[in-house]
Length: 204
Image (cartoon, rainbow, N blue to C red):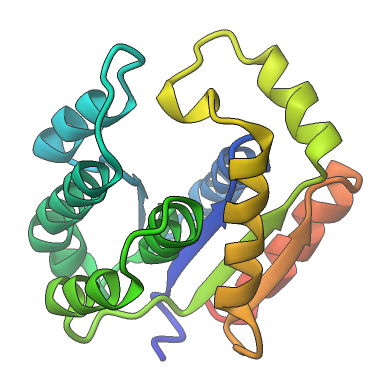
């Protein structure tokens, strides 16, 4: 594990506070003059952002296998062009990564887990996250937060049953794994930020 330049991932369903936390951490690292890059998935470079627009466009309706292939295509672009070049050279902060694909496309949509894992292994080779935060949120708070969103994309409009499946998928993925940290997004934001930062400071 790279202690100095870790790969840190923020995971969770819509409205669970991932983006708030990754922005908080990136601001902290900026103040401390640490070299880091921040990537969102899908996205992170020009080609992946183009694919992101296609995936999240409210007007588009794909079958779940097409959805999966688009996400993996976007990942292929950033792994080759961004992550490989910076891995272990800079701190990498990621808003979603491989666990999102398992949680959403396998647990949420029923796509083949072995296929997803196989393609992820092909894409990533030896690249592994050092620390993964899983943000968990109550369905009541999820509904509240989604209602407040001004710009909703295709993934903000699923039924609550779908988000429940995805969230329980995240819990299954992270079971008994030491590099995962659960974040209760229903708690006070200051408390959450302190927990996140204290875990990050152990490895940078």
